[in-house]
Length: 215
Ligand code: GRF
Image (cartoon, rainbow, N blue to C red; front, side, top):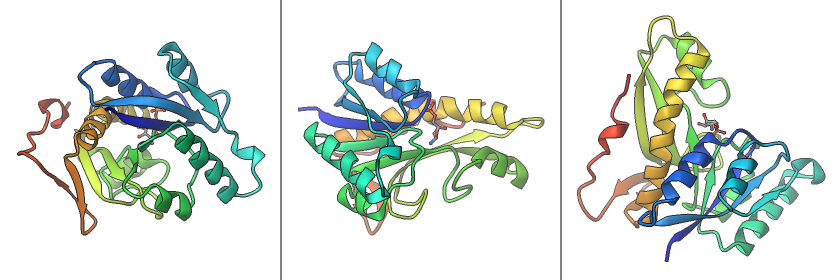
C-alpha cells in the first residue's frame, strides 16, 4: 500500500512536478491522490492533469473565514483518503486547527535554511544578510509560520553578484531533490518526531549525494 499524498498548490507547481516525477517510479512508496489549488489559474493544475492526477480548485474567496476554508480542505483531503498533505507553494496561511488536524501528516518546503529567513522574500532576506549559504528546508508544519520539526535541508551557496532570481533558481533545483526524498522517508516509515525533533530510524540514513551542497 502506497502512502496517499494530497498536494496543495497556488502557482506554477514545480515542486509538485518533482513529486509527480518521483511517483512515476513504480518503486516509489507514495502516490499523489489529489492536487488542490486555491486558485483556478495555478499552472500546477495542468501538470497534475497531464499526469492524470485528480485536481480540485477550492477558492479561498468563497469562504467567509479561514476556518471554513480549512474545513473544506480537510473534508476534501479525507474524502480522497490522503495520509500526508504536502504544501508546495501554497500561498495561504493555514489555521492552527488545520495544523493540529494533520499533526505530523502535514509538510512544507521553504526556500531557506530554517529557522533563518521565514516568511516571504526569503531570497531577498538571505542576500540582505550576506550569508554565504542559503538553501531549502522540508519540515512538519506547526501553527507558527515556517516552523516545525525539520526533516531535510540542503545547503546551496550564494554567489557574488547573485540577485533574487539567480539564488531562487539555484535553490529550486535543490528543492526538487529534497521534497521527493523527504516524502519517501516518511512513506517508508523512517521518520519519527521525538520531542519536536526529527529522528530518522530503521537503518543509518545516508544522504543522497545529490542533496549535498551544490554550485
Ligand atoms: C518554492 O520556492 C517553495 O519553496 C515555496 O514556494 C515555491 C513554490 O514553487 N514554498 P513551485 O510552485 O513549487 O514551483
